[in-house]
Image (cartoon, rainbow, N blue to C red; front, side, top):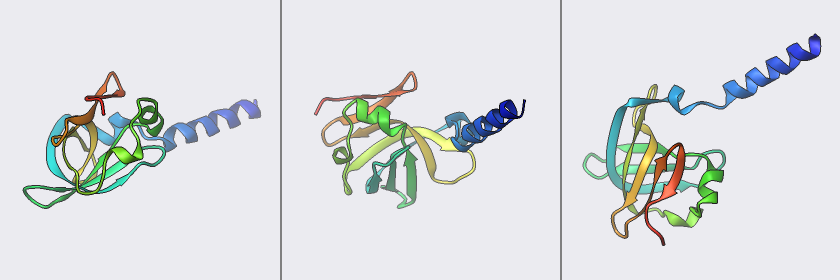
Amino acid sequence: MIGIVAVLVVAGVVVEAHHSVAGEYDQNREATIDGVITEFRFVNPHPVITVSESDSGQVWRFDLDNLLEFDAIGFSAGDLKVGDRIIVLGWLARREANRLYTMRLERPADGFGFEQIANHPQLLAPR
């Protein structure tokens, strides 16, 4: 019995430690941001893009889906660079200003980007 309780407690801690998209972001509050990349971190568990918005200069944080899913579709650390202009559509964070979960990203210069389809990223244009 003690073993079962211990497993349930550990499982609960693991589940709570990894946030859900629905818990962190509001699917009813979308935003589209046009800006220039100031930092791109292709890190585990989720890549992060920092952008300076073109019109206002506000700094935004864009959270991406799971790193392994991006790796599986051929999206890599070299695909986005500081200075790239991107347009991002995403869900606003529930508790933090200027943060969103990226649902679609486009780089107008060449059409490269990705879109979340059925909870998985898919490339918009081949390289």
